[in-house]
Image (cartoon, rainbow, N blue to C red; front, side, top):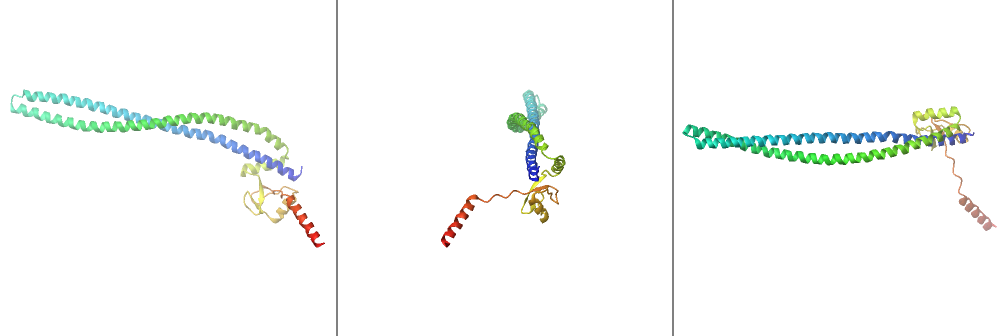
Amino acid sequence: MTVQQELASLQSLQTLDLQNFSTQQELNDIPKAIKEKQQNVEFMRNLLQKDKGRLDEAENWRVETERDLQLQGDMLANSRNKLQAARNERENKAAQREIDSFRKRIADGEKEMLKILEAIEQCRLAYEEHAREFSELEAALHIEEENAKTRIAELQARVDDSAAERSSLAAKIDTPLLRRYERIQSRLGRALVEVVDGKCTGCHFTVLPQLLIELERGEKIISCTNCKRMLYLKPSEPADADNTDAGDTNADDANNTAN
């Protein structure tokens, strides 16, 4: 196998490996994305439970306050009965004091009830909003999980299919060269890079002139002296046949004119 053939085999292998790396990366990222969405759903579930707890607490507070207002109202009625049944000034004043006290308690209780009703409304609105968000997140998660299962199956099939192809490509490469390629690839990601404008595109280090000459000769595989990646040059494109023909025609016309 010539050096150019070896480089071509390495390029094919690297292309496949990069595709597999991208596929494996996506396979690794999918569970992470799903887990993040699951955490968001769980966070919203906990928030919803807290909202429900606050709403229940406010409702209990309302019930207790209503019960207390009812009790104060009953006691106010009793005090009014006492006032009507008072037999002297002392009993009259005592009953009036009780009435004033219960009236104040009821007024304070009614103010507190307004605050409670406002708190209940706020808790209810928060609960309903978070319940809507939770429902949307949970529905979206179920869709994402189903899509993820399908995508994982597709990607895994792609990885499995490429395994045989990689074995076939690797078999065409001499073992020492293959080991060298895999060692560099595991460390740097790309083991084979192009030289452009006299520089290694892997590390942007200027390739020594002597190495460029050897690279152009194509008699052996050349490595970058800085990053140790294997280097290659893109073959120069052949001259445009139309331009060549046009040049020949112009030359003939010039000769005819001279004659």
